[in-house]
Length: 76
Ligand SMILES: [Zn+2]
Image 1 (tube, rainbow, N blue to C red):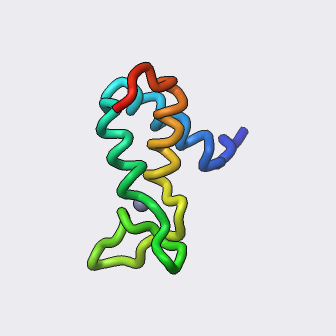
Image 2 (image 1 turned 45 degrees about the horizontal axis):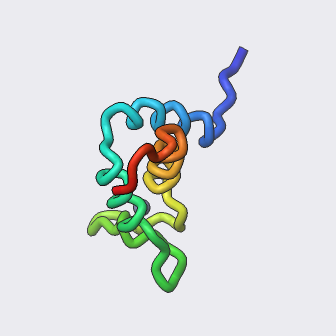
């Protein structure tokens, strides 16, 4: 039996953990920083050693899912 390798499952698993560790302001900062630039790549994931991923990047998706899990009890 093989575990299905769906990114959404991974993202959800990570997001459930982060929902307990990240504050709403941490999450909103990630969501603000990780947006598409004019070429469609993520502004928040620009490292000198590797190409930035196409947006939405995994980190943004994780933050978005975490936000949804938390249900945004308060505005940041
Ligand atoms: Zn990013």
